[in-house]
Image (tube, rainbow, N blue to C red; front, side):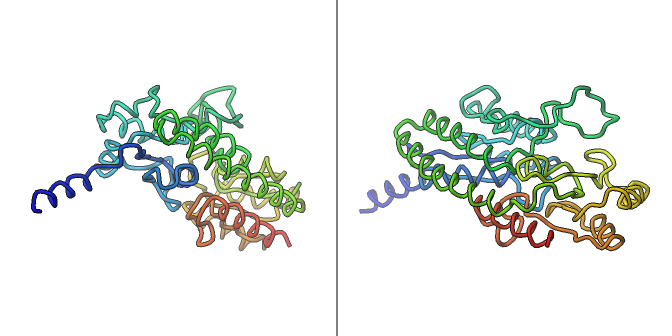
Amino acid sequence: MKRLFSLLLMLAALPAWASLNVFATVPEWASLAREIGGDKVKVYSATNAFQDPHRIEAKPSLLAQARQANLLVAAGADLEIGWLPLVIRDSGNSAIQVGRPGYFEAANYVSRLDIPTVLDRAHGDVHAAGNPHIHLDPRNVLKVGEALAARMAELDAPNAAAYQAAYKLFAGKWQAAIGRWEKEAAGLRGVPVLVHHSSFVYLSAWLGLKEVGMLEPKPGVEPSSGHLGNLLARQQSAPAKMVLRTAYNQEGPSQWIAGKTGIPAVLLPYTVGGTNEAKDLFGLFDDTLQRLQKAVR
């Protein structure tokens, strides 16, 4: 009996042989991995909605999680360039090195916006591969999901059919939701907005919002009083209807603009977990649209 108990303990300590350990760099892709993988995957998100994914410390806890991963899902387009290469290198995990099947970049599967024609650090924190915040166009989520399901099936062949079936189910619900969201958001088309950072480029392109100014004088450079004063002056000739920020942006600059102009300062969830309502990818877009529609009334 004692021997049997010891054997059961050993088996319990082992991961299920056909399951995947997924290391996702950001909450949105962790959520998508759970949608597709269900109970066949164990998903770890390296960041949460209240952390700037550009600036994360490569802590030992991240290395430990990366060391156990079969699949690393990154946003890509250099979003995580300040910390992810170090995590991958120091994990010592050959399966998730760049170029291996266990390394997946979401940005590789969509058409990226804001690809610079000239690279110059004088222009701020510009991403050479284009704007990396691709998940805020839900049509991109669909494209990434299809590629991610295929990669999961490749890495875990015994569960390939389950991943494909789960993606098909998700895609059906997601396409229906996109139709509903686009109908509900028709009144947002052409609405001028200010943004704290270039986080909402894909959301604006999808909904037809018109970004007329950014609180950061250059991408990645904190708002200055002089720059905010210039934006305030421009409100006379090109007025914005609201100012948008993420949960991890400083509240002060958008509140200052709101106080001076009377336009609403709107916190958007930006990713899963950014608000209480954004509990998953569907909640992320439901809550984003509700907040925008409330602000424009």
